[in-house]
Image (tube, rainbow, N blue to C red; front, top):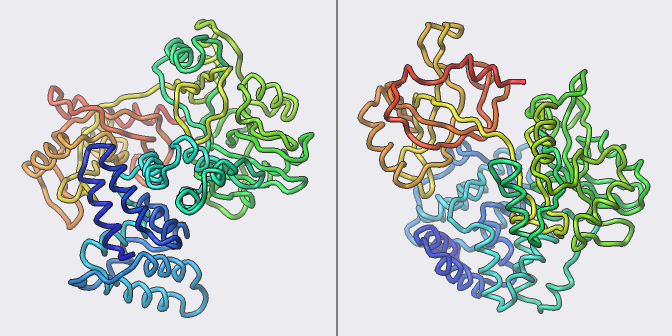
Length: 513
């Protein structure tokens, strides 16, 4: 199939607000794809090529991307083959070979195809083809039950392979997809509530009408899924990346459990000398390092999906917790089973006092819904809001092309600790939480108070106050204030406030543990 057919479908999906129209457009494309191109095309659409990241960034692309072709000739197979080449080319002369391969393919691409290929390569595909919509498109194209396709995706962890199976196989083939020890599954996800009482109410509505739940600490750590087959232990991240070689201490712990075959769900984090959690980025730095560092990781487990030939994902949480306690002992996450809001509030206070994020409230009768975010798991954690000043804004890409999108956020230096008193100290960036209406407004307004610009960024007079919600603050060398915001998103612009009403860098720094 010509690549431009995939590009046109992506554009259609982006342009429409109708979920049904998105699903039908994707289903029509999937029906026409040759069998060998189904998995690659699916990966392109969601920005997750089957080869993973291949080490190409914007800078490398811009240096090789020449004038676009006038007519589409590239196929899906051509781009898939390019990714294979980029992934496997190494050693002496590899840089020149990779550049040559990139230049040869992109020279044959039209302007729209060049943009599409660039976004596939750097993993920034914003087509609106969310995985859930694509799952429905696969089911429509294959004339298969949506629940059956969705379950196969979750248990295999591979959307492209599931699409190929659904479109070329039978419903029985989909039904045969199950848990395989050693193959990671997509993790169950939690929705959000404002407080423990509200979380209990959500769980009651979503499960059986009974609010009895397991109220568990939510650690400020990294999600892990651990598989054990005999003495072979493998550890995966929430995105299903294999990090076994980076967490030997977790492997050692799981090898000591009384089991032969095992799949566990949990979190890991590093602890300080007093047993408290170290900052989140210290845990995450271990996942990016090939050699162990000084701070050891300690795992906690909150679910078990398989034990010695027995699949447990369809068992109620009450059963899974009994099995979990027998297997992991002191490595089980702390929590209590209760229907009493006062108890849930107490567990939440204990978790926060211990330096953790909050709690997760889980319906005691619920199965493990791999990859789903429903009402069976509900997280509760404090959300901080701060008034900050917009220092600059970067032009957007993809569907935000032509709009000023990514905000540079500054806090007030009240004491002059980082320069002159009353100056602004950058503490982070965000493009989250911006509606199309806000994007249009800020694109017009920011250019009215522009100080200077580069090709990518417009620098502003520090006049605009924006209310930002964050999950926390962490130490960082990226910004001059020594901190960075965690999971920042825009709540609203505060035209009622002057820049001098903004929160200070000193206030933000006090949140770092």
